[in-house]
Amino acid sequence: MTLNSTHQRRDVFIAIADPTRRKLIRLLADEEEVPLHELTEQFQIGRTAVSKHLAILKEANLVTNRKLGRETRYRLNAGPLQEVKDWLSFYEKFWNERAMVLKTILEEE
Image (cartoon, rainbow, N blue to C red; front, side):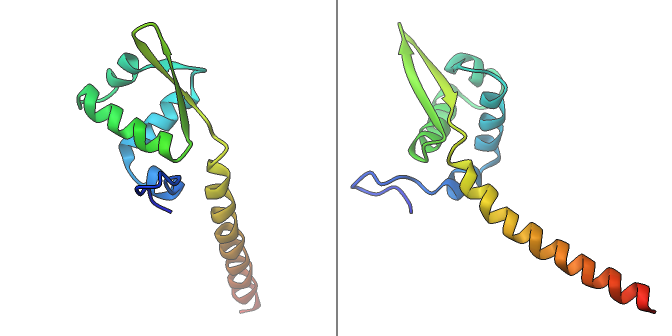
């Protein structure tokens, strides 16, 4: 599901497709809460671009934010990543089963 005029939740797979957003998730995973200026320092892009990436992650419910004075602080909400884990676990099982079949065939020869 993508974001539209009714403000539906952005698809988590779309949100994590971008390497900048994946790096933001990783940075947020290391800390309880991170101010925008500290996140921006980790990239060679401007504050506005980082904010746009964070907005997409927020639309996918992957991050939350709160104002503390004039500062905006961000926090990871890893819950929606469970959907990605579940999807990947199916393919992990699929490939593990294929590898076992191949191993059996190779051992028979």
